[in-house]
Amino acid sequence: MSTLSNLAGTYTLDPTHTQLGFVARHAMVTKVRGSFGAFEGTATTGANLADARIEVTIQTASVDTGNADRDAHLRSGDFFDVENYPTIRFASTRITDAGDDILRVEGDLTIKDVTRPVSIDFDFEGAAQDPFGNERVGLSGQVVVNRKDFGLTWNAALETGGVLVSENVTLTFEISAIKDAAPAGAEPVVSEPVAVAEPVAEPVAEPAASEQAGGILGWLKGILRPTAR
Image 1: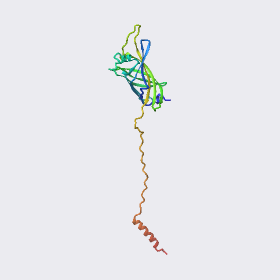
Image 2 (image 1 turned 90 degrees about the vertical axis):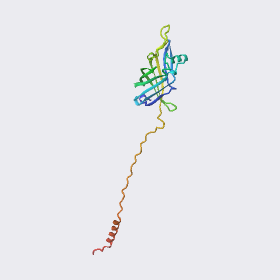
Image 3 (image 1 turned 180 degrees about the horizontal axis):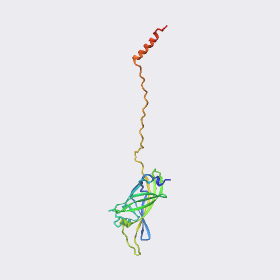
Image 4 (image 1 turned 60 degrees about the horizontal axis):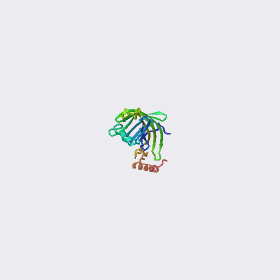
């Protein structure tokens, strides 16, 4: 089974299987849930989370709570003010393995140009290859923030006491990320073969013509020389 230490490479959020949401109390008695439909994000890491980094950008105009009037109010200057602040951004500053398959991500969250540090513990749900050959990883987590810290201060008092919208908002994350494939055309590096010189036989020197002639003449003289009696 895959563990956090086995992850390595670049992973891209799959928007069709990822939910970036939030939960806030309404009128002190119930919860309203919403999410953002347009976002992009990547995570890059070496083995054992070496040089790990996560970056996410969310389009604030994509907020959706299932109610058109409420969504229009959230896009207005009372809340996200999407015309002036079209994105929410997150950039990690430190990522560690907290044990028990918990990925601890610390980073800077920016809403309406106000940046605050946050720390999010993600449950590592595992890694698998889908039927299309994609290597996927799953993570889930949440963190509570005070919306007033980011300039989202609008509220309305209730006659019975309390306020219409809670200051504390729970941000929720259900992540499915796909590992990027190797660049197209990339080929493994192959070492050039080293040429090995074949041994060359030393040429055999032919005897000079004069030497050949001397040898024959010497042989003939040896035959014809009178033998001493």
